[in-house]
Amino acid sequence: MKRSVLAALVGLALSWSTAHAQTTEEYTPGTLGVLDMALGTGATAVENASVTVHYTGWLLDGTKFDSSHDRKQPLTFTLGAGRVIRGWDLGVKGMKVGGTRELTIPPDLGYGERGAGGVIPPNATLRFEVELLAVAPPKFKAIGNEDLKSLMQRGVTVLDIRRADEWAETGTIPGVQRLTAFDKNGQFVPTFPDALDALIDRDVEVVLICRTGRRSLALARAMADQAGFTKVYTHATGMVDWIEAGNRVEK
Image (cartoon, rainbow, N blue to C red):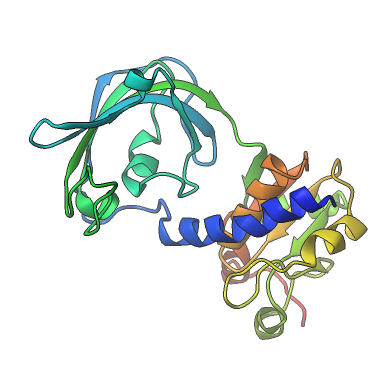
């Protein structure tokens, strides 16, 4: 694996940590304001898709602090990857291309107590008008237990990317390959790319599984988007769900 790819994958350890902290699970307080100003008719913005938007942001007093329209340059980001504030990851999800949505984002889903750039004050509630211009589907696929069983019956390689202590604690799925991708501190293991190259080619199917699906999601995203793997699957809910569903493991 080329060094540039290695660097990209190592760098993803940081985005894995961000995604872990800003997961787009249900937001309990329910204080994110979402108002559809115009409903689109195109592709839907789904988790892990690449979305392109035009937007303008205001403080609640009407002060405009940013606008892609002014720069004549739309913004593209991966939905749910933690690359934008959490209010955007939650609020853009479900939009259709051609649609416009107003988001009212409380501080805990925005820039919090710190504010940002000397323009957004601490604890600011923000208002955005977001227009969805384009959606590109994910280059990898999230699957569940039944899909995993079907793929294994076809002989597809499955990589359990957890640590050795996790394998010992719960056991592993019979027939999987074990290859640790992240250490106990969440840092990417530098030897992983070369070991991966020794196991599989980039044009063959491969499934990644970890404890809950978060690490495998981050790694699948990097392998598909940055390292040229074309048939990557990630088990969305990981070994926790596999075991709770009563499926077999071996130690």
